[in-house]
Every structure is written in structure tokens, then in C-alpha cells.
Length: 83
Image 1: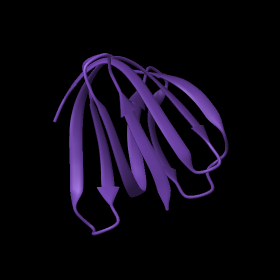
Image 2: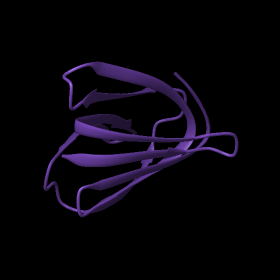
Image 3: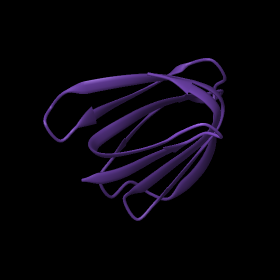
Image 4: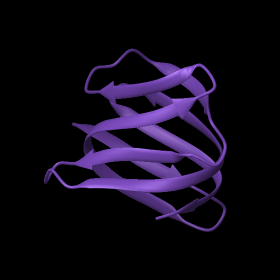
């Protein structure tokens, strides 16, 4: 399980997820449990996809975002997001 926290100046969303798919300028990353630690800049204006523990897939559109993944905690700090 991964703990996902999405943070913007307007809102904070916390989810427990199975995997996370993020697009960067270097390509698309799929992050699963016990993935190596990383800090990456996410591609502006793209969609962040993830799967909840229930099996339901969710997507959010992000603007100007950075992802920090460490010890099965993913923190995305973005200027804005739309669910």
C-alpha cells in the first residue's frame, strides 16, 4: 500500500493506493509499493492516474507539480489539480 497526499494552495487530498502513474519529461513512471525513492518534476497539464485499494481507478489533472516518493509515501505538490 502507498499513502498518497496531493497538495495545492486550495486543497489537500489523502488516499491509500496500490499504484500511481505519473508522466514526466523523461517518460511515464508507474510507482508501486517499495519503489525506489525519487523526486521528479511532473509534466505540466497532464493527468496523474492511480488505483485505490478498492480497485477503483482515479485521475486528476495537474498543473506545475513535483512528486516526492519515499518509504511508500507519495507527496505531490501542485499549483492546481482537477478531479
